[in-house]
Length: 381
Image 1 (cartoon, rainbow, N blue to C red):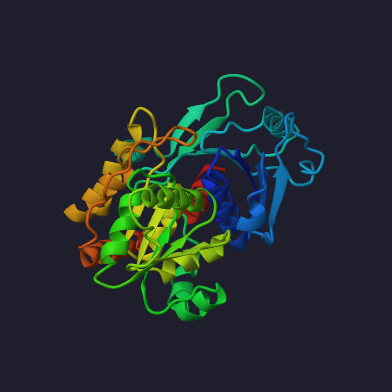
Image 2: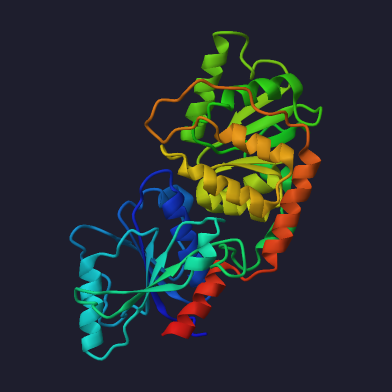
């Protein structure tokens, strides 16, 4: 495979940082394997805390309308691969410039639509499907649909080389100390969520029963999650003492974490609550019990996707029940939350550990997404 190609990744930031998180992780992984990457993004502000040191070989380009190609230097560095992430549609100025380069004798780029992650059956059917372009300056070109997934017949999952070795050398005690977290041996739970109605029930249950009979320290991520936890505590205070005031629950609020530090958070904890696509994959690689809050949709289309993932995970009944409770009644961002409900009992953590480790072991046997992308591009250039 020719790894020293010029890749152009286009990303539009919708909300919640999942799109830019996936695109940055892919860009850095490609660059670590020798590729040159231009990451075109309409709002790169999240990278200031997500990836503050950048990455050698990755150039962050401003995706304005219209697109300014002056800094891209396409004449000297023509695009070999162009990726539209999550169906964002590459800027027409860029496509026109690539088409002009082809007419000048430069090989046209491989055009890939990198889709959303799902365990549903259609992913295997649709992965690597071609879609001929019918009109415009790139008429006759082929756009390929590339679907991340959990089986060998899909595009795989993002996993950088050396990840398992890094995790094996991770020092939990040292990391917690560096974060200023006053850990006294409690069970650790990370929380990265939207605004699940079951949140207040979870806080109350942890305060009353802990986890596996031991006190709990809840590590709450910054932003929406922190706001949701504080709102839930205020909701509970109207009926009884706050769950973070006595009982078996202590709460630590974290600063914004880089992608590397977010991995450390997942590795440090005994149970992880995650949301969206990028953090789901990182929770899988962590090999710890985890609960996923899928991004909710008004028509409940997300529930079929959630069930497909639970089937792929071969989740035990108690974990399925918790997933459904955690995702019940949720609504998209900016919509009003419904009443909160009690969360299912957290009494089966050992079965969840076994499930997480089995899934991790199975997925580690497969090629990662970047490797499969490199193979695909080499085959279709």
